[in-house]
Every structure is written in structure tokens, then in C-alpha cells.
Length: 234
Image 1 (cartoon, rainbow, N blue to C red):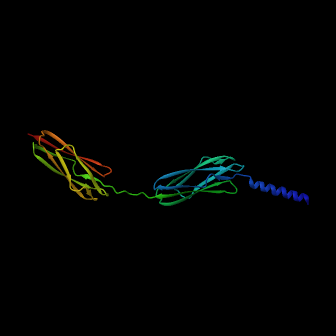
Image 2: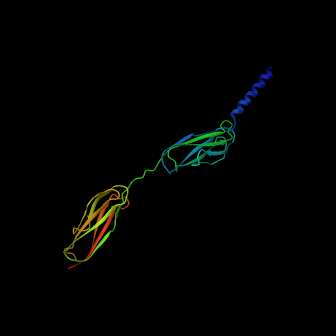
């Protein structure tokens, strides 16, 4: 009777210890939140896996819940007490709003053969900013041969070919002999404006060039330079 009790105790103890031993998968953190990201961005996070057991942990397979997510580990076999990195990459192209993706790690851990890791994010759709586009039909005008002292006038036409409101903030001339006046400093998309230029040829002679600089809120052509020229004879 006593021998049977001792045998049962040894058997129970052996089975209990056997349940404690073996590979055991764990992670420093089970989830990661990327927060807000822009649609089309690719983001990466590295999970750290470890083997807290007393036998070699063997990674059999790694699966992601979406083709937009990839996961690669440095090692497929992890010795007791060792760690390895699991690099997870999420491609947000075509995604929008809150995203939750799972990465399942299959191993020979007898208690947790399927180990679940989670990544979260909120994918923000791109915002299209409507911008103005300042467009002149021509950027220079030649008055040709003129008599000295004559007041010369020319009108440039310009358009807003963008989708945002165009604002002319400043107009400067290279000489006090030249004046430039715009009829409308604010143009809605598709609207037309005119820039009237006057050039006083008094006390001038020979080939003469003057510039008019137009400053606007066109992000690609913030500064536009127009040129007028004349061949002035006494």
C-alpha cells in the first residue's frame, strides 16, 4: 500500500514537472499602435520574442491576417533564455480608417502553439489642397521703334488656371518710368485679369528694357517677371 502511494506521488510529480518543462514563447509586448498614419505610408515595428522555457523553441510558421502585412523573424530556432526580433511591416496603401492586423506565430510551444501579436493604426486619407495657378498669355512685349518722350501703354492678360483663389499681393517695376496697375487682385478659379503697363520714354534713348515683377500666392510661380522693351529714337 505504502509503495503504491510512493509510486503514485513520484508519477504525479514527474508529470507535473514535465508540464513545466519544454519551450515557452513570450514577447516583450503583445501589441503595437502606430497611431495616425497617412494613406500610402509603410510603417515597421519590431517585436521581441523570447524562449522562457528549458527546451529549444522552434518557429514553424508566421502568418499575417492581411496581405498588406509582412512579418520576418531573425531566427527560426530559439534556445532557452534567448531572444529574437520579429520585424512587422504594414503597407497602408488602399486602406482607410482604423486598422487592426494580427500576426500568428506557430511554434512547438505545447501550451501556446499559436501565439498572437497585434498591430493597430488609423489610416488618414490624403487631403487635396486646391491651389491657384497664375498664367500669362505672354511674358514680354516689344513696342518696337518709338520716339523719345512718348508715353507707351500695353495691357497683359492673365488668368487663374488653378482650383484655388488667386491673390496678387504686390507689383513692382524696375524703374520709376514704368507703372503697372492690375484691374483685380483677387481672381476665382477660371477668372481673367488685366495688368496695364505704362512706360514713359522721356530722357531715354536706344534699346531699353524694363521689368514688372508680379507677386502672388501661386505656390509654383510665386514670382512672375514680365518684360517690356523699346528702341527709342531722339
